[in-house]
Amino acid sequence: PVPPEIIRDCLLTAGTAPSGNNQQPWHFVAVKDPAVKMRIQESAEKVEQEFYSGTATRQWAEALSHLGRNASKPFLSIAPWLIAVFAERYGLDPDGSKRKYYYIQESVGIAVGMLISAVHNAGLVSLTYTPSRMGFLNNILQRSARYKPFMILVVGYPEDNCTVPVLTKKSMEQIATFL
Image 1 (tube, rainbow, N blue to C red):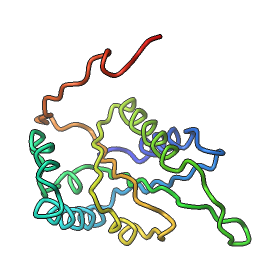
Image 2 (tube, rainbow, N blue to C red):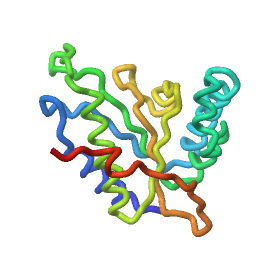
Image 3 (tube, rainbow, N blue to C red):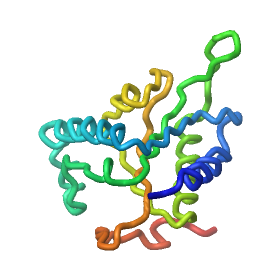
């Protein structure tokens, strides 16, 4: 188990992220309830089954093959916390009129990066999960269409027998140029 205070602190850190015009176009839903996590898992596995049985191109499926990916997503109900990240498509003024948001994807991406760093600094581990279709999250987590699902961050302590795929990272020369 992970105390909710730790998750709260991580979300407070993410909430300090810079954003376009300081509009903070994100919303986080921290899910601990086992029944809700199970509903998310069942819906995600349905979407994943459709993906792996037809939507995915052969090239895409091959690119994922070395990671051992498939439609089964038990981590969604096993992990102590799921943090669903939503991008807020627009704001609402006090009179109910829509307020345009700028740099939404970039802003939410920065907030997620800060959230992942905060999670890791808290001694936890995370897994980013981005199914191709995530609209089921709006229904399960009671978010209106104003909120677009961005990612599910799976959070907890690593299991003692946890295995992680061996991944190679690009070299410094491949990721950076110094002038």
